[in-house]
Image 1 (cartoon, rainbow, N blue to C red):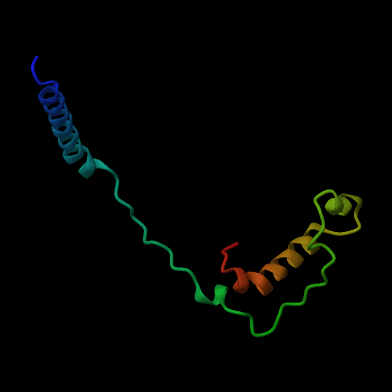
Image 2 (image 1 turned 90 degrees about the horizontal axis):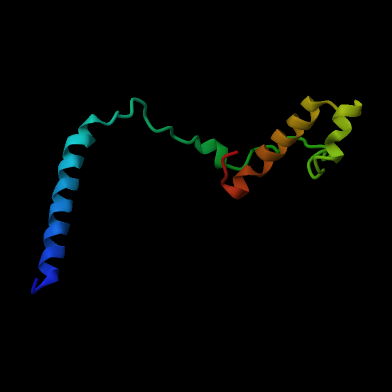
Length: 98
């Protein structure tokens, strides 16, 4: 064995040929996407014409403080509506999809 690089190159060439053959055989068998990519609505990233009113009672509270839902001081609907209004008012600043 005078030149081991020839053997390494030969083995690499054979492995590459096997890989290419498998890709040619397997790739056409993969399922194709049947749906189109969704397009983002540009109005989600624009500043609202009028800000949605937010009282601010629940926005910056921790989860343990939001346990007031369990005690009946607030409803989950109130908390969720306030968070959604806050997102609508501030989403244009962050360009985030929430």
